[in-house]
Image 1 (tube, protein in one colour):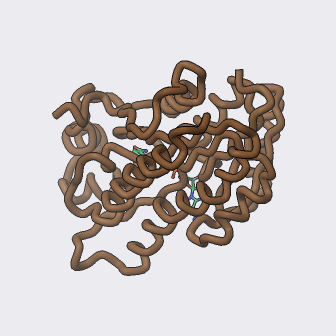
Image 2 (cartoon, helix red, strand yellow):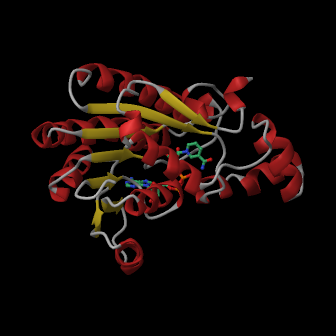
Length: 256
Ligand code: NAD
């Protein structure tokens, strides 16, 4: 049980982050939800998790494109036994057309924020004598696709940074691992479907099966619950010697 532990999950008012928050709460952890917005809905999500799982749940606003806000998130949380770096965005464009601001935002939100939160969380984990860091990378942390230059670079960077974190904490009861999902049907992927349908002149079903899931041999999306369960496993005693590695949840994508 993760009772008495506090989990900070970045980018968790939606999609995989929310799924992870729920599974960690189900295991008894108190959770801190986060995104860059500060809406009633965000705080209501925390209240809902608190009621459903009988844990303390808070929502803390922080824009992770800014390093000081990423560090501030951990400071405001006060305790951080489990850190899940999950916040992410996507932009699809050829290298020569790639908007510079999008490149910078993707690197900041998905790669640099993990550096900042990890730097802020490690002293808290060391003081508590225990810690788990799980970085949500991607199959694109291990493989590439055209037109996803910033995303693939950031995710490969996350996988590398995870290994360094593991080595720097190797002699301590702290582990750092990356989870590499294939396609999960979240708002992030939903947003790519209309473009794909238009670009290939396909209906939704065909675009899903013949373009998106073509890389995923199972031809099925992974679910946010499965991702949450994988993170919960990495936070369990069974995973105490698993560090500095990646776990793919990708229906066979990276087997090819
Ligand atoms: P999502 O859009 O549902 O969730 C992304 C989360 O990040 C949201 O909560 C959003 O508010 C937050 N976020 C974005 N910009 C932020 C910022 N500046 N500051 C704070 N929070 C911010 O998408 P998702 O699919 O759940 O993605 C979650 C993670 O999983 C991402 O890192 C993504 O790259 C990764 N991933 C997703 C898939 C997939 O198929 N959906 C596959 C592999 C990896």
